[in-house]
Image 1 (tube, rainbow, N blue to C red):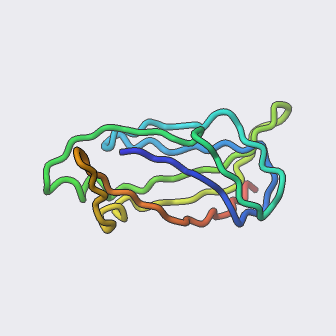
Image 2: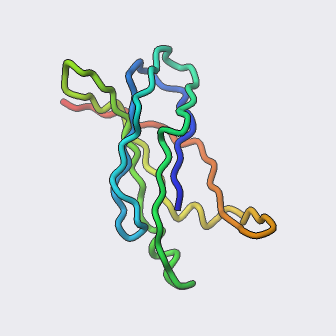
Length: 128
C-alpha cells in the first residue's frame, strides 16, 4: 500500500509544514514524518507537496481478509515546524482506507492497482 499526499488547498495558515501519518502495523505502515518542511506562505493558495509526503507499506491478505485489514483509519497530521519553539499541530485529516475498495482497478499490461484520489478536508485542532 502506498500513501502520497500530493497537495494542500483551502487552508487558513502559513507554516513550515510537515506531515505525520499514524502507524498501522496490520498494513505494514510505520509512523511517518515528511521531510523536508515545505514553506506555505499564502493562506488559501494550493501548494504541491512534492515527493516528501510519500510512504508505503507491505501486507498480505486472503480474499476474505482485505476488507478487514482496510477497516483502519489513516490519520494525517499537519504540523508547523519552528526551530526556536515547540512544533504546533495545525490540523488533522482522517481517511477511511476501506474507501479504496470502491474505486475501479487501473490495469496495465503486467500489473493493476486501485488508486483513491480524493479531496479530504483538514480539521483545525485546538491545542488549548
